Length: 320
Image 1 (cartoon, rainbow, N blue to C red):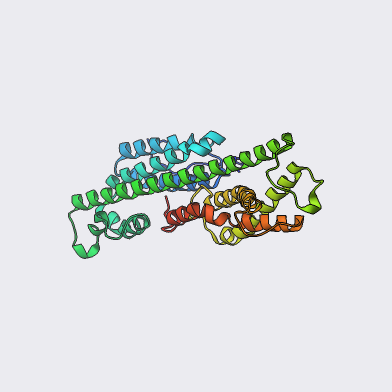
Image 2: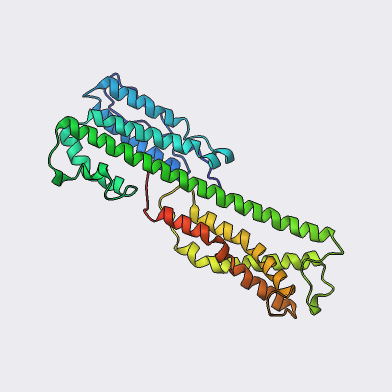
């Protein structure tokens, strides 16, 4: 479900901005979680720039103007944009660019004090032996002011690039799982429609106690039973999974994929049983639906690839 923004009471921009520094326009609090995070980060950067402007008003004004471009994308939302993620990527990459630009306005003492925070954030997405981290190790000695500034810039650039790539990978995985889910649901609808229109071919052989049941109706109940099995098998992982702070709702997409794939697995499994490839028999409707539930639960073997990929992405718990 795509979250749409609301129009609550507007919030004023930062007060007491130095003379000559443009004040950002009043903005409303968005509803989407990623927009709230961006809005909070923007407010924080505006406040920091208001303080740093006393050192270089022109550069601070340029960075504030760069941030103002993000304001325009916070109010937009739509299905295509939700899939492409252009607004989200533009917002965070602009914020990252401004954070790197603010390094030039900070004093060496401030940069030294912020180093633990920089290193901690970068360590979430970078390996511990990455050179940009080891170069800023306090045990390596105290670099010159210019060298310190350059190393902080390099650290932020490397960290931001890795973070942007991480979010792009998560968005691609979300879109792939969504595409597979839609394809599976469409396939299930088509299968039921084809069986409804076809009177001489039965995909599933009816048990003896369901001989008078239309073939399409029996197929429909098998699909429902498969979805129930998929839901029961996916419930534990859906409850314990975490989003890792991502705006892409990967646990939800994983659950949707399982619910969409389960019915197809159930139909294919029962067709194999009826075809004699599995040594068992289906003598009643209850047995048929029970078998559909079992095969539907077996979707875990089919969707395991998505679970592994999501676990790999969410393992580092990377943040923007």
